[in-house]
Length: 209
Image (cartoon, rainbow, N blue to C red; front, side):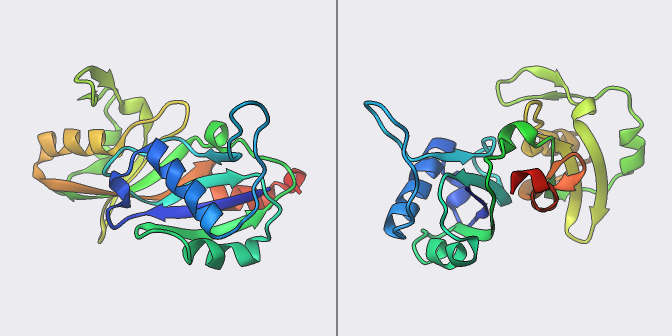
C-alpha cells in the first residue's frame, strides 16, 4: 500500500475531482507503476482520493492511497517525471494496511490572502456566524471554524474537513463582506487527523505497518 501527498497548482486547481482522478491514473500508467485493479466487468485502478477540493482552490495537501507495493523512495521521481504541469508528488510512504483517510481527516489549514486585517479572537468569540454557501443557502459556519490567525502570508484558517467541511472560499467571501478586502486567493497547506498532520499520524500509527 502506498500513500502519497501531492499538490494542485499552476492551473491544476481548476481540474475537477473526477478529472483529477483520471490524470492520476494516467500518471501511474505512464510511469509504469503497477497498481491492483478491481474485479468484475468494469475493472478500475484501486486509487483512493481524499475528500474533494473545491474547484479553483490551490493545494499543497492532497492525498491519494494506491494499492501497490511500489517503494515510496522511488515513487516521487517516477510520479513527477510523468505528471502534467500543476500536479506534483511532495511526499510518499508505504504501509501494510489501507488507511481510510477520507473518513479519518477532520481538519484542514488554509492560507487565505486578500482579506483586510481584523481581530480574529473577537470573531472566534462569536456564538454564531452565518454564511451563504455555493448553493446560495444560508448556513451556520461558526462550529466549523477551528482557528484563525494572521501571518505575513495572510489569514491562516484551520477549518473542519471531511465529514463536515467548510469551504475556505465561502469563509473568505464572508470575511470580505464583513471586513473588506480584494479578490481572495486560497491555498490549502495541511490536513489533520486528531490534531496531528496526516503525515505525522501515518508515521505514528504503527498498526498500519
